[in-house]
Structure formats: C-alpha cells, structure tokens
Length: 204
Image (cartoon, rainbow, N blue to C red; front, side, top):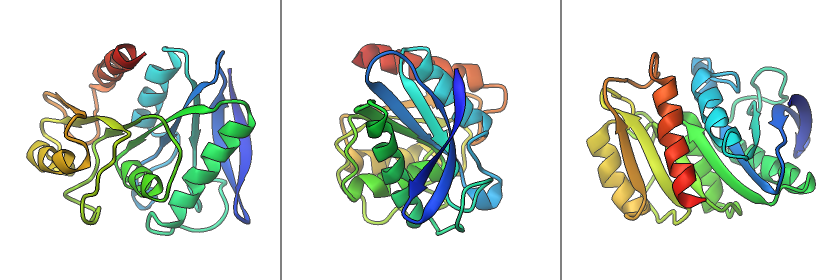
C-alpha cells in the first residue's frame, strides 16, 4: 500500500510516496522538469513505478525541492542530485538496501549527476533522457546504466542522439525504441510498462 512520507535533504523536507514490498529490493523514480509541470504524480513516473512494483520492488517517488509540498526551490538539477542521495539514504534506513534508480526526462539528468557524485545503486534505467534539450556535459562512463527507453517520435530524446551518447555512457546497455510515441507517451504507457517489465525479468 502506498503511503505519503517525508524525509530530509539537508535542511529541506521533501515529500514522497513509498510503497513497500517484501524483501530488500527497491527503486527510486525521479520526475520530469518541474518548470514544465513535472512532479511525482506524472503518469510516466507512475508507469515506471508500476513496472517495478509488479516485479516485487519497493518503490519510492518523491518531489524534488521546490515542487509540491517539498521545501526549497528549483536548483537546475544540481541541488536535486542531493535530494536523490537523501532519498537513497532514506530507503537504506527503512531496510531497503538493494536499490535501483529510474528517471523520466529531467529525472534522468539528475540521476546521472548523482551517480557521478557517488550514489550507491545497483542498476539504473532511463526513460527519454533529454539529450537534445539539456546539456549533460561530457559523456562519462555510467556502468550501472542498463537500459534506455525512448519514443520513435521523441524530439527531446531523439534515437540517434541517444545511440551516440549511450555508446559513451555504457555500450553494453540496452536501447528500446517504442514506435509511434513522442516524449509524453500518451496512449503508450502500458507499452512502456511492458518494456520495463521484460528488462526487470531478464536481470532478476
């Protein structure tokens, strides 16, 4: 059952939704750009949570600083990296220590930065990393990255751009393209869940 939770990120208090499952496996899902309306209630974030929950993971989605009831203000993806690190610590404190991270759009930018900062996670998946919209910086290896998903009509996360970047992030990671959808996955949320579910089954 989902429950509203609060946790600290430095001096800030952040709100989240935690759904605990049996075992010590969990996933943290990060949301799209808050300046464009992104928050933890985004339907793509919900679809990602569904896929992991149905495979036995505890799930945590939360609002970055300055979003919803979370304190502070938007920090261009920098302070948000600390928010994710704090979310990882929170999950560890609840006894969930086998942690994956997944993100959608802006959330993938934050996740990649947090991993570079030393976030201790097992695996990472990305849904539509906004490589044509945000500057991810010089691509560096991200060994925990296992799967990237985008749409065939996604102009924010175009397939060919992702393919080149993924080779530098982790050439062994998978790339799945959902035909017919753009950046928002309207009408394709179930397909997104299916693609993620197959990945989770393969690595289980």
